[in-house]
Structure formats: C-alpha cells, structure tokens
Length: 166
Image (cartoon, rainbow, N blue to C red; front, side):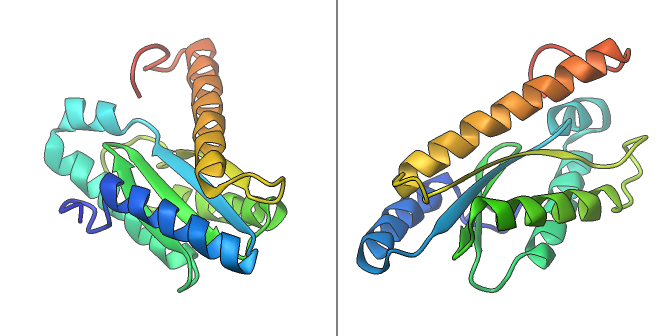
C-alpha cells in the first residue's frame, strides 16, 4: 500500500496484472489499462515542497476514484504515475472516461498551480489479443508519447518544463 496516495503500490499492481491475466484467460473479459502521469508533479514538489506535491497527488487520486466504477482498480505505480484497470471496457468507452476524468481534474482547485491540474493518459485494451501485461506496456508507451507532445507544446508556447522530467 502506498502511504501517500492510500492506493496499492507498484508491486501490488504487478500482482494485480497477473491475477487479471488469469481471469481474462478464464472469462475472456475485455479490459482496458489506463496509465496516468500527473503533469508537473515533480515541479510542484520542487517549487512548493513535498506537502504541496502530496496534496496535488491526493486531489488527483480523489478525483480519479470518484470517476471510476466499483469494479475498476487503481494503483500508484511511480512517483507521479497511476494505473487503472477498467473492467469490461473497450478503448472507445475508456476514451470517453479519460476525457471526462481530465475535465473533472481540471475543475479541481489547487492553489499552487496557475492553471488546472492536468494528467497525461495512455490507454490500451486487450481486444487485439493483447495480454493484460502487453496492454499495460502499450498504455504506458502511449502515456509517454502524450506527455512528450504536451512538453513540446508548452515549450513552444514559452512555458516551463519543456525538457527534463515532468
């Protein structure tokens, strides 16, 4: 259990992926994996201190949990990364969820950020005969691409953090 986010941690998520792979083999249930990176969390920690970073993380987790169904599962898999398993959800429905969640997160008030809290979300489902682990890896790669595009866009617009860790 991750003490800051009050979520299962990375090792718990690895075990969860293995369990879900067994369930998928048994039931054939479609599953979408969402990988999220809270944009700018490292900068918030650096500029405003760890308590502000913890507050941003907890606001994100609270908003995330309220956007999910009871059957969906979430874990903290890195300092600024969360993973979500969306059960019985294809990529089209997951994309609708991701858009709605990003809107809900942007509406959260956080005093240490001039604009809204944002996150980069990568999605991948098991529809194309991907294993759950393969879907997680694909979602992570997609998240990294989105994150890179956003950093380049901020750089072009004159914003901070165009290079280096988010």
